[in-house]
Length: 278
Image 1 (cartoon, rainbow, N blue to C red):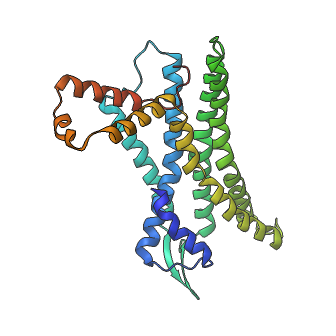
Image 2: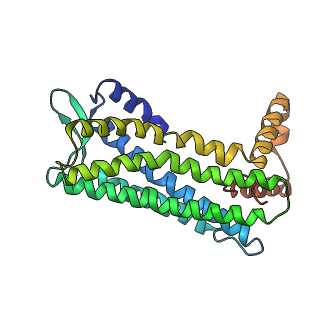
Image 3: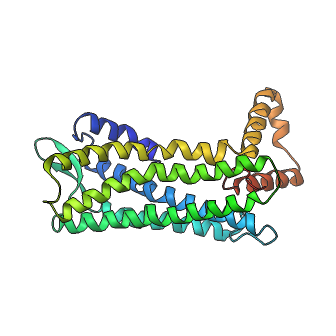
């Protein structure tokens, strides 16, 4: 979702924080961005935890089977939590008219308290909580698959650590600069004016760096998976080699075949990482 908001933010940055698209898009684009901000980390943490449990307890049923409605409730709960956290910030986002219109989060009262509170919520829920789950589970996964005598496991161990490294590399600089900005708000005389200017400039850079997760995560969690690549190649080949006049005949399939295909799709969709330890 956040990809569709990027053109607005890119033009805003190019025009020196001037917002030309009205109050509605100001609030909507910011809301979409913040929801993605939280939900991406929540889903990665859940996927990592799910993968760890499926690897360490292969003979036990999964916590949230693909076929079960609880999985849909869990996903809905993650989106709902992301929405609530996003609304805490978005409620104070508005279009402000100074020399030029701008889209800002500026509460009418208690700006410092709101900024510090929202920033700490962001630090805890978006970074520290998910990072502790992702790093801990990936370390335990790497330790578990090392015990299996297989050359392929060496690549799997390396890949598991890459998951943790990419998450930290994308988000640690952002939260580090944000924390320094919190300190500056709490004690305005601690940093010099030049230092504050460097912090605000750096914040724009680390925001761009954090968006790298939109590219890195699909590659790491999908395209490095053998089953995903094989299914993608087979699907593309079958579509290309399919004769035009065979579509109607293939549209009618027996119930057994349809059920089998659906089960395979559900099984493939349940993999959270590459085929590690499978």
